[in-house]
Amino acid sequence: MFFRQLALLAVLMLGLAGGARACSCSSSVSTQERVADASFIFVAQVVASEATDDIKEPQGWSGFAARYRLLELLKSDVPPPAQVYSGEGGGDCGVPLFPAISYVFFAGPEGNINRCSGTVIFIAGSRFSEDYLAYVRALAGRIVPLKLPPLVVVDDWFDLEINLAFKEFRWD
Figure 1 (cartoon, rainbow, N blue to C red):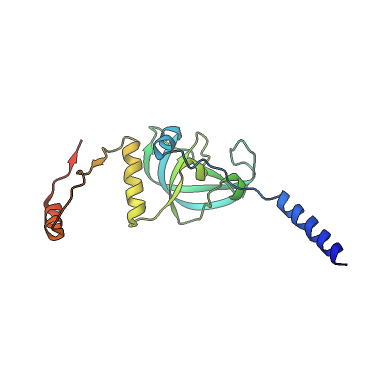
Figure 2 (figure 1 turned 180 degrees about the horizontal axis):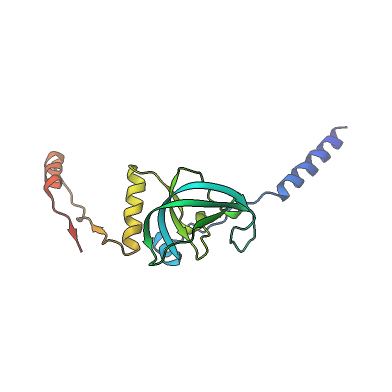
């Protein structure tokens, strides 16, 4: 009896594992490379999202199409596609497209996006989001990046705070 249960458990586990898939983005791709590879980079707020079988992806997986309100165009001189397309997540590396949420989209020519492309949720007021957006703007050539002064060894932290408050940063 024990061996039958063990065999049944093994069959069930193997059957369930066969359908599992995982996203396999290369984390070694830099933001600079992602900016160069994207056809369109823009900040937008999703206004509607619906399931679709036409996600404009070579894998042909089902996913979601989302309409959006364009907030800022960072890369491209022509308007981006009217919708963005993403897989469901998991093995297709899809990005969940939630209505009322803003994103920094790195899209292909037909509006296809995924986690590997660099697309991320944008939270206005979040220091991380704002810094990331400033960095992407700089890489996309929309503004010149800020060059921070070199690090220095400081004996007096109070003096450092005063000096940094009045320090002038240069734009190159």
